[in-house]
Image (cartoon, rainbow, N blue to C red):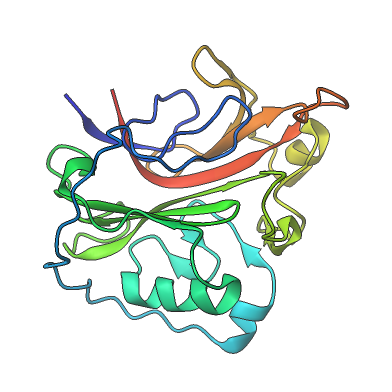
Length: 225
């Protein structure tokens, strides 16, 4: 039985896009054979004001937002902004009833990828809004070496790059960062308590050379076993 969870570092992600051992997002739902369904749910009634400067500069990743888009932002707003920034998605599963998120949290999800970025949309309330509707549910940003999406576009709230940080650099950013080891995902970093944690992969590069660094950042609502 699936239940509502958040992006805790030691959870097993189910049906919200798979992550390889290296932290690269493949974004393929657990059930690979999905059936597209019509987008019958209206967008949530949430106002998101985005300026051109928000789309031109760095995108700040926080526990509550992906750049200028808070978790819970309406799908059309997010899709419009992402397309302006990164062009057409490299992958879009469309809405599917076969990959609904969690029990009691909606019935359909949609995974959209632009290179190293995967956004999950769901027709359900999030931790930031109780309103039901199609909205941004979570984000995942990886250090995918094959991605043409610039890694330096993504920063943490200190304005420094989110990817490629050492343990010392992460601890300087937030003294409460921990570095747990998951039997499922391997070395991780995590920060935050309660409803709004952030986490990601923390490991050496694919070639094994060099010290461990932040290899991904994620936040939002996921499903856990």
